Image 1 (cartoon, helix red, strand yellow):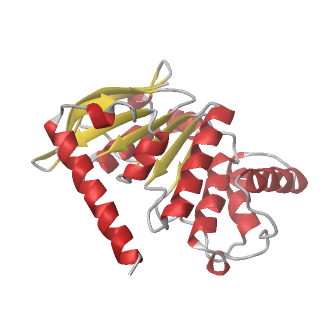
Image 2 (image 1 turned 45 degrees about the vertical axis):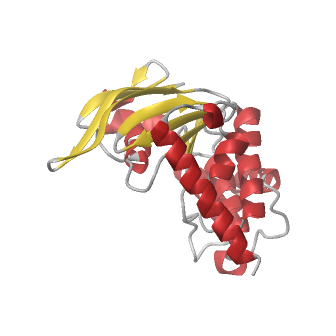
Image 3 (image 1 turned 60 degrees about the vertical axis):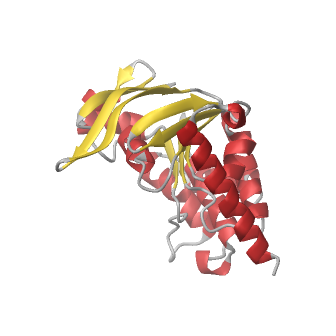
Length: 253
């Protein structure tokens, strides 16, 4: 479990996050949702340790991650997998080399062991016969799957996904969501997904944290979200549904 307690982040004189307290559970897909500029990306980066909070604490299990030294944080970072918004693959490396990269950085495996582990993870995300291709030679959906394979190659305890469906068509987005959910259950990771995609919210949102103007204003799951009487949340859901319908209508022309 990851626990966030009274987390606040101030940039200059602007309060971006204010007194956020929440938990993210093991073996579930935990989603952070909110409008652009709501603070959800800052929250995700604060949890990972890319941003230092102004106040508050982040616990990984019973360990107060916020209070650890830079060297002490390395031990936990080795247990973290990251799926970035733009996949963030190395253009000059092959698919196989991209997935093997964390193994070079953090393990003493032999080259054969690294290759076997990389191939296992590629097969797990349904990427076959693409090991020696470069990122420029594969589709956007396949890039995300390769990035997901790289994120799980170290068998992490924690998996962070930043807008995993950004730039993908609806069908591919559903496949990526399903992979994230399956991997979360299979490896029992603490998975946190930062998204504004309502299809993801309704499809895999087992626990949802809604951030508005830097504050937590609603918490629940995808079965509860449509029956919520939270006015701010309802406006967000309605606006996103309208945007999806408009996008779908334009695509059918």
